[in-house]
Image (tube, rainbow, N blue to C red; front, top):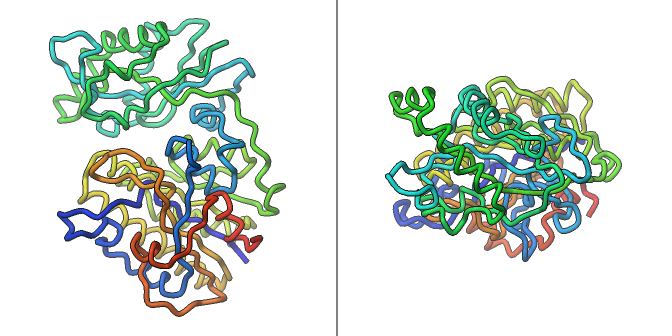
Length: 401
């Protein structure tokens, strides 16, 4: 038996008036998911424990079978693992986003955060801008590392785990109330605006109709993680397929194989087919037991508040990931169990995450059920099934529970 998780990041949502009271998932044309749903167990899973912030970090740890209350030490340390930064026990890792702030003639703290992703900046553009930041701001205490797209890393030597606000939680808001209390962090953010706002590359970006990437933004502080090995914990050899450093870092920390896919970039236009075929190869040729396919696009479209593009992202996930994996595994005669779910909701009207339970669908190619439902939030709720501890979902997948 082979095992698959297809994770549509932020895919769950709430009913929208513009969609006739449907969610993007219910409105989207998803023939593969709906066909599978009729043969599957469906229900809700609570991936984010009470009292914890609903992030892709806590939620994906949970889906992978790790209790966030016991295993979570911060988001950025997981991303540090992904890009090969060897943290010392006394180091603090900080996510260093490159964001878009408004440009009025006002003090830095009176500016508004326009875009947490700087028009989904390419890693190439971001590396140029981060090099300018490094030259101006890097010291022995603060080191900067290039990650992917707008997501980068700062290591704070002998730092503290301080309370910091994710930029995607405050889109459209004046930043004054959300700046770090730590003086050095705030000063670096202010200086970064001076370095970046009129950088030649940002002038070019404006001419191309792109947002300026004109400030760094710190958040997600944490200490070096210590995850139990996935194979030792579950008895399965696992592979991770994701464009996002966070997911790769979780996999590295858990001793899983990280599979790189050319063209997989975490955007709406990622290489879906490449990710699907890489997953099939892991299971059929590379002797892996389990593969985790993470797709970032629905979450990004939720943060952007784009209903049309969130629907597209869900439809692409259905046709270009789930459809391909299903058809290829059946063609190879592979028996498999597939769990399809989001990590958390990213509702269009909020443009940020919530910790509400998410719909899951668990399909077994050897035990096809006979139901009339489709895969939607409403159907999952009506099923009456609720997994209170999201980290137990993987035990359901592996038939350990």
